[in-house]
Length: 188
Image 1 (cartoon, rainbow, N blue to C red):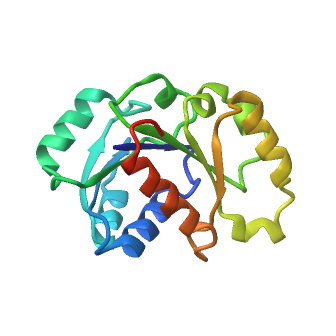
Image 2: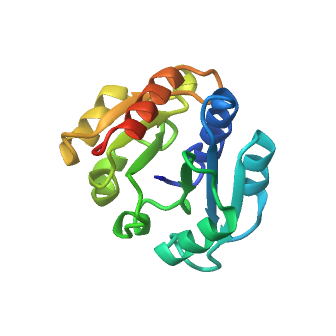
């Protein structure tokens, strides 16, 4: 189980949709979709071809282990499946809650600002991987990739960083290779 954490609008759902479609037939993916309200993202994930369960937190800013357990009980993922938790969009609360995941994967969009890792150090310190998403937008933004990477490494020198675009597919093979390694290793 991987816990995907990020700000709202960073591209978690789009990244999951692309991953599900690209890995269909190679990897069984089940998704626990966390939001405060609506079933919109859960419906998108199911339409992409994955088992999905929507967990709405109401006013809660993160998913908790008991919510994950109820989601797993309802999903009943096939043996050997990868369970992806798309946590509520928030760079503070989800860092503090262990959901029993193998790893936290932080997603930072290039539309957000290079200093997010230093502004929200607990989230990036708790993550094994940082996906720098929406890199297809770089020609249109004033975003310094080297500065963002330095910011992330300042709070977590061991974090792996992959630049991706769910829209164009850039870097997705590297993400899939990381995912494959994570599934076969004890420690990510």
